[in-house]
Image (cartoon, rainbow, N blue to C red; front, side, top):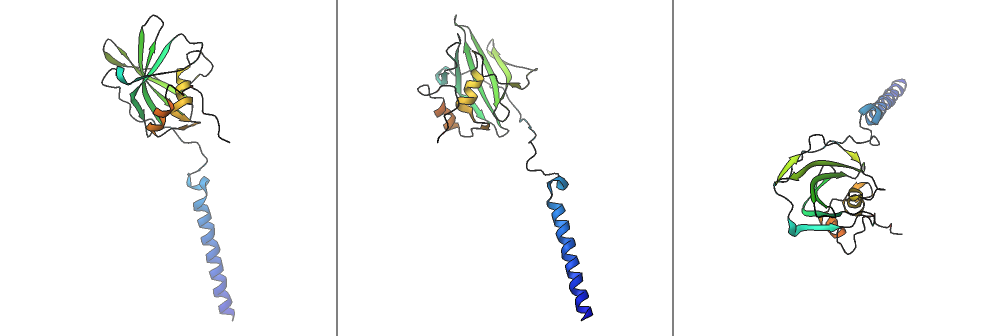
Length: 183
């Protein structure tokens, strides 16, 4: 009976050691895989468009009552990246008719935008100093905020359906504001 008790005791000790080792392996602090840790952003490669914006696919959108500029996005240029960046071409027209054409990106997770390049003299020019900047919501020319809140983002997540983005940009209903919460 003493041998039987030793055998059971050895099994119990083995099970305890095994369970302890399994618990350590599943500990996020030990494995380095903390599911609550912030994700590190890794931007994908961005290539400037090869063509100017297509006038037939330019879609004007509302920004604010106080802006003197007109804004339009080339719907053919909208690219929803797997890296969490939505890239697009925007055309900004001043009151005298002068246009600025830019290729930009928006990150919904951090509410930031980046200028990749501009279209001048019939060619795209890369912006070598382009870096991520905060999107400002409280300025008259808040077009990045309008696009982010009204179409490209679903709160702080990227909208991954191009169809949904295009429906959101419909001039009949686009306000440039986040959608009202459904209760």
